[in-house]
Image (cartoon, rainbow, N blue to C red; front, side, top):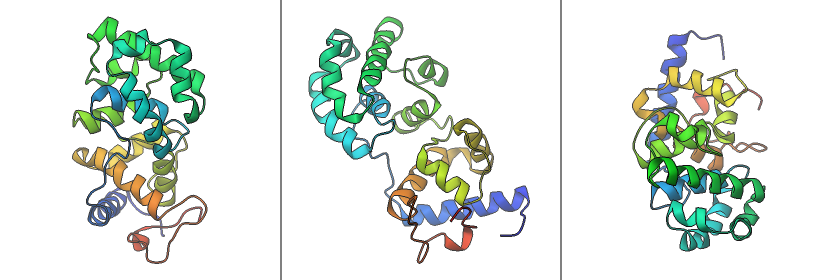
Length: 216
């Protein structure tokens, strides 16, 4: 793909969004949850773990812990055992317990709908905060940048950055704010179903004509 101007990249990005929206009209967060707290905990557990595995784990976890106070009261050893199969379970259990302790002490046990308040919690960075804000509260504060979004944003030539923070900065310049949360869902679904890390299915890809295939 020839060198493109910022305006042309923005136009191409919108075309990508239009195509992915048509391809995945039901795209949504694939973590199972019914409350803001459940999504917050599930997203913390999803670090370096598949959503499928997290959903298996939280099926039992959410029966045991229904409120932030429940996590605070639960012995750390029991919490570790419940989340063990998600990997890095000791650190995740520690963060969840510390996070819920702060929720009880500072927010009445409720998950706050603000970026600064969320990222002040243990184990919660911008990615997790964006997941919660975009999916539970309908607030487009930023773009979720996970491994799929990182990989596809590079392949699509939407960024040359390598850190999540810088990639997010590039993406929010290209995508209308109202589509920030949806963009992540579209890209994640496409990454899981079409554009895998090792064997992307470029033939027949819905956005092949818009993709420079960087690194492929």
